[in-house]
Image (cartoon, rainbow, N blue to C red; front, side):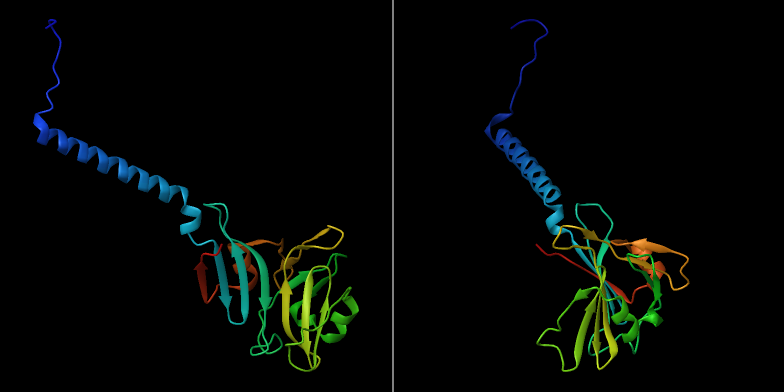
Length: 198
């Protein structure tokens, strides 16, 4: 044997088997960790729903680590209509005109409506829908029951972005809104539901 050389004694078959088993467990655990890390976008919730009375804000959190950005706001339903209970806020039209939530009467909405809309056949009798490039207003018997805002592209490929603000008109934000902006405009939520969807 060369002087200074060392030998590697596995310590017999049983010792070798224990080492192999230990290495296998380490490798297995490492693989599981990698898979979980790589699939975190699937395991983590990617849709957040902000609830406050009859207001629902919907956000997507993608890619991993991004804070929620609320791309859709709906206020009011036929069961809990806008005209009975709605948060106070303001909105800006594409022409720069600002309206408060209390201004959204049938007469005003008809005067700003630019898009032809039809009420869905499943909607109650007396329902009429009006829209601008940025917003959708649903009326039943001349009363506003639902308001919606969401960025979208028209048939010509032009992107229309709603601008929502505080009732005192001191702060306005383009959609999608951050959670902090949503809270600033509408107040703290009753709850936030986090789910995962494909």
